[in-house]
Amino acid sequence: MTTTSRPSRLAARFVAAVALFAAGPASAWNAPGHRTVTRIAIATLPEDAPEWLRSETAIEAATYQCYEPDRWRGTPLPALKQRNDPDHYLDVELLAAHGMSLATLPPLRYPFVAQLVRTPPESTERRGVIAFNSATVGFLPYAISEHYALLVSSFNTVRILETLDADVVAPEARDRMLATARQNAWREMGQLSHFVGDAGQPLHTTIHHHGWTGENPHGYTTEPGFHAYVDGAIVSHHHLDGSTLRPWCKPLPMYDPEDAWTPAIELIGRSFSGVEPLYRLQQSGALEGDEGRDFIADRLTDAAAVLAGMYWAAWQASAPTPQQRADFIRYNEFDPPPAPPVDPAPIDPAMGAPAAATTSGTTP
Image (cartoon, rainbow, N blue to C red; front, side, top):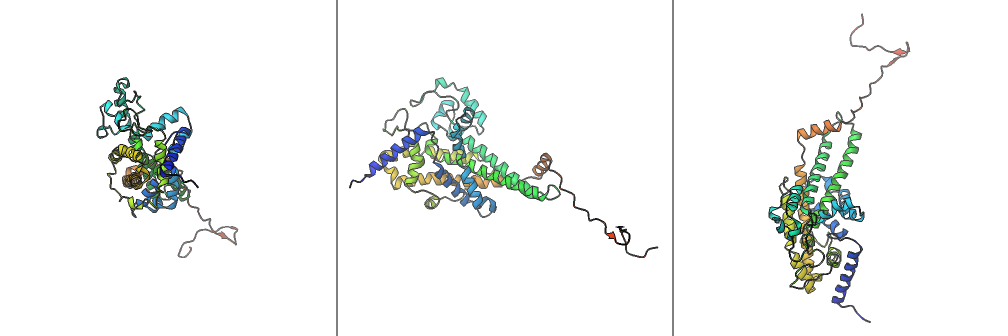
């Protein structure tokens, strides 16, 4: 009987990853990895968080929604691809050619685009990378920041609906709207999770996202399938999920509710610093050993901790003001609650007509 050696098994996984890459666009972590990040983040929320945010229903909804941005890639419409594809990455090395760095990025998307456009792409060629257009550098931190804002808004709507009394909207109607609003919030929890998870994957922060490109003095792999290999095969090989990752889980970080930008940039920076270590682990074969397991586990749980901190910060930022509540009632123009029923006057059996109202005392 012949046995398959460890290097041969590694090579087989690599070949399978190349085939996966050829079949379609790669994502950061496969669906199980994204679901794991979401589950850990929700489990990290404090007991002060409302039960509906931590319930099994919330987990089921958010872990489904967390992979939706990659499902969009299965619909090859140009408008959707242009809107969605660049949101999944940021090629950090390309920022310098436009006079920017992670530390100096403008925190809003369109000023960033304006800065890219002001630098003619024809003059840009770094480390053997050919000129690029303004979309190629990626928009990952902007996707995170914008989905955080959407989550704050969704939480805010839930909290306002929870305060509405029967004099504003019928209780049955309010309950239906509240259920829908919570579904919206779970959707945004999942959407935010996807892009935070992307930011935890080193290959989503670099020009070397599908194998090393340009100058390669250390002889790192140039296989395009390396990306898919990291997304799925390695996570599966090390059996990394919500249970096995517990030793690497991190405490809930406390963020400024008004600033999701800073933790997003810091997470991208930590992932970017892991690009060459990841390639070295692959090159040496250590990626399938304990060192590789620890590396991937740290990236998954780092993303999960950042996500949990953003969930909690978004909840704190979403507390409605009296003005927000008043505006919500005004602009939603709810149907007025039905008037309470009026009891009919009692029938006088002798007269066959409603009896006159009586008062205490004697009649004249």
